[in-house]
Length: 156
Image 1 (cartoon, rainbow, N blue to C red):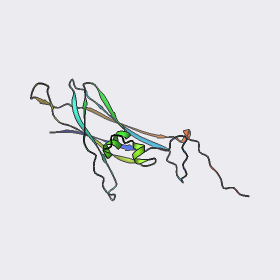
Image 2 (spheres, rainbow, N blue to C red; image 1 turned 180 degrees about the horizontal axis):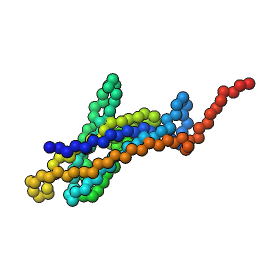
Image 3 (cartoon, rainbow, N blue to C red; image 1 turned 90 degrees about the vertical axis):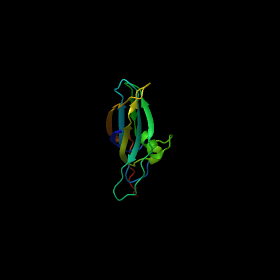
Image 4 (spheres, helix red, strand yellow; image 1 turned 60 degrees about the vertical axis):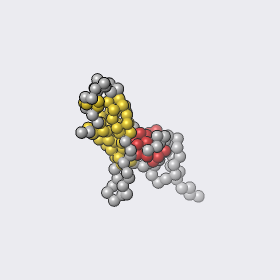
């Protein structure tokens, strides 16, 4: 048996402060999801994580990312953010969200955590190490931090 956790993620990068954009609509909302994983056990827990992108039904499906192995020591925690989702979805360890998807592109899906039985050191005894998994969703607007200039058409 494998224990599995899934947390929805959504990421959208807004226009960076000081950036000029010539467009009818400026992407001014930033959305991020941080998935926090904590090991409450008194032994290290090895687990696997992957990202799965969720698209609309009529869009071409995108294959899930590959599993990545991690180990958390007792009472340690790790955070998975939008850059990590880009790494997991592309398989590129140097990927960043803004570098992969750009500005104004919303990417959503699931980050999946899988845990196999953990073998007790020095024995053949197996046990399951549960994890605390929490998602933190943030949506912010940069409207007040932007210099927005309207240039009306000149009439002579």
